[in-house]
Image (tube, rainbow, N blue to C red; front, side):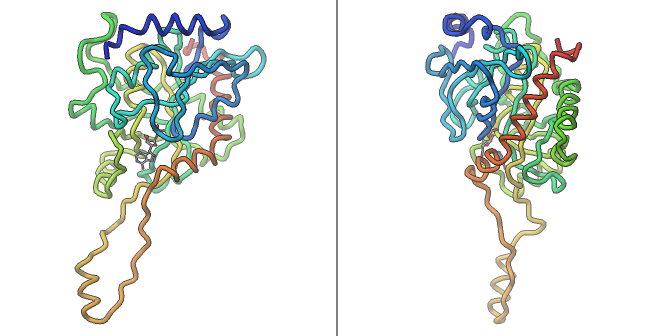
Length: 313
Ligand SMILES: O=P(O)(O)O[C@H]1O[C@H](CO)[C@@H](O)[C@H]1O
């Protein structure tokens, strides 16, 4: 896809269907697997299906809708926001310009701060299922091995050819996440800080892959987000990422030994086997549903605080 061609048409379509007060959202939100319910706290919502928007693909993953939601969030007049109800993943077969197209649209609508959510597996024994991890850094094997979302000519002459990512995750926005958790009286363990590993998917990790990512310093792993972060940074946005831990990545301390089992069997002995978990997308969506309310409140509170932070304007 030529990423430039439809941008103007997309913007014209949005201007023609949206009331004026929703046309310049200040904050963008990306809803992860099972997290599209974030839109329930918006007021004066206008939904624009992706199929009506030139340049937009359709999401094919359950737990992801296919619409942009515009609305007002927070007390008083409310802050104009736009949310992606459904994102695009590389494993769906979308190319990178398509995956990040909605982020480029948000940037042209005037979004300066973006809150990206996702569902992720925990690699860290001290980060249990249900925790919301405020991402401080990422580990992107695809970026390092030839599948970087910025491959190819820059989409604008104003974009840096070599984008620094050491400052990708805004400390000011991360601060607002923890302040919000305090304001909402969430228990301390509801939130954690950590590093997100991006894998292509759609396979979940083997134990050896999970172990490698853990040893490499990742706390959670998922199949999205990093392309959006990279492009949001290229477009000059401040980025906050919050991962909801929906499952543990299976990393057994030692492998079940089939040889031991056979040898024991031959000696007439029985070996007690530990139960081995297998992750499923249904499990991922179920935890999303359980934690929808907390995530909604947290995002709502952060959105309300952003206009009060001078360095985020
Ligand atoms: O990252 P999001 O879109 O929240 O979804 C996560 O959940 C799916 C796997 O269950 C994958 O798409 C993974 O990336």
